[in-house]
Length: 270
Ligand SMILES: Nc1ncnc2c1ncn2[C@@H]1O[C@H](COP(=O)(O)OP(=O)(O)O)[C@@H](O)[C@H]1O
Ligand SMILES: [Mg+2]
Image (cartoon, rainbow, N blue to C red; front, side):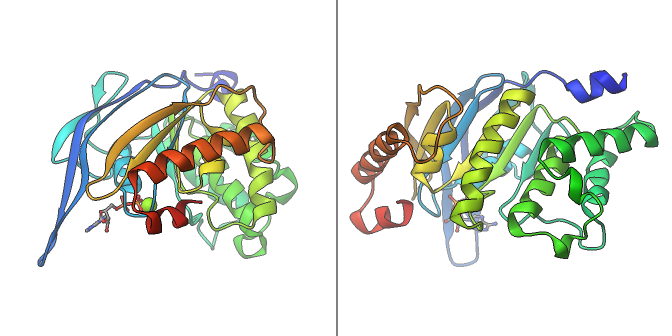
């Protein structure tokens, strides 16, 4: 594969979550984390999963990633059953999980170890390309401890994008950041998604974030974790996090969640 093709990337994948259930068995109790969850995600679609803490969002994402196995049901990626982690489905977590002994460039290069068939010179080109894409071309040599929280998440994003996965799974990736940094990243992630056309599944407990980013918002509720409703967000992009339309969609999502949850649980999703 040429460097140019490598930078272009493969087409995004279609995902099918097919009647997935999951229990966590512990000594004293068993948690029913997911109950008969089914979802079809189109190639290149941006799905946001929203719901209060404990509703199984991370468990679902981990099962799609192949990091956890379902007790019932299965996940298909491009019609192939997911039986373990793979380089076409990469996860980005809330904590950037960067290696502190490597600089920004080194961290992205590390992600490229997942990518066979690239020469070292090509790896370096690819790493530079993705650091550029996330706006960090001036910070390639910076050490992890010199980077702000937002910059660390940008490096983590570049590291996840660089091996060209067909699916990007994001578990509350911006939750630990301050509001200003987050809003910048909403703009950036929309731009990057439009340029790279990945299938993205993004988990959050923030309804406004969901409305700002999603093609479709999947609403989940806990005990047991279930999909309750799916909303389409038919707004043009790029979307402004602070616009009236986003606020309107967010309040619809909140109202739906309120309909499913006890009042005290709703506070945590607003
Ligand atoms: N490894 C685990 N062992 C036991 N229980 C777990 C484990 N992972 C998740 N759970 C439980 O499963 C439920 C769903 O968790 P999780 O998927 O992390 O929810 P969310 O990401 O929506 O907050 C919770 O009740 C949680 O305590
Ligand atoms: Mg979680």
